[in-house]
Image (tube, rainbow, N blue to C red; front, side, top):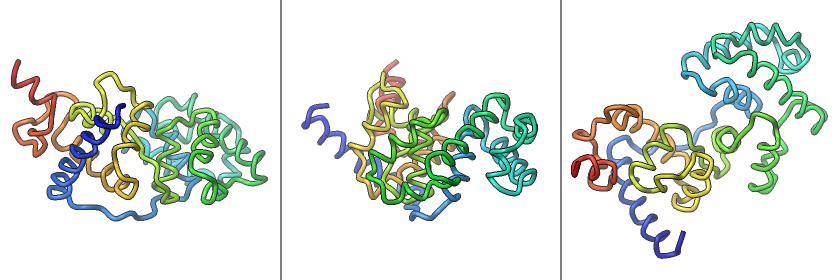
Length: 228
């Protein structure tokens, strides 16, 4: 990405962010789940709805009193508890393996060491865990630890690609790096939540409500659809 193009994208971002803030407000950072809870919750969220993820997470916490108990449980018991999230046969062993990885690395189940680790090292440390990709790592760092990482979920990927903030062929994994270059770190949290809200309410995957969209003037997808 050339410097001139990067500057142009930053200017475009500023206009988009201002419009989103006027429409949805500017959410201040607040802590979400504790880091290990966020790790498990995000693994459960893969390829399922928020409702099913939450049901599975609550069932897991109700069934096992501690993460150590989850780690040491019969795999079938964990799979049974998280079945509402779907893909339980994959997610159960993945969660247990992640908890064992934390134990082997830190001597206990904790992610507190990430608070002071250099950011890029923290990302690499997390993504070395099987089943943890850039999105999961960024969610843990941003939402649990308040560190400047930008998570790209399906809504963020779709909306920013339609707006032209990232390229049309940019994958979700690549989008993490591209958007972290464009969006100021202090805006990661607010912009992430604003774009998700806009994606859910207006910029749907199918039949987006372009006529009601406050970002029409900045949107390549809208221009292309109008021209067609």
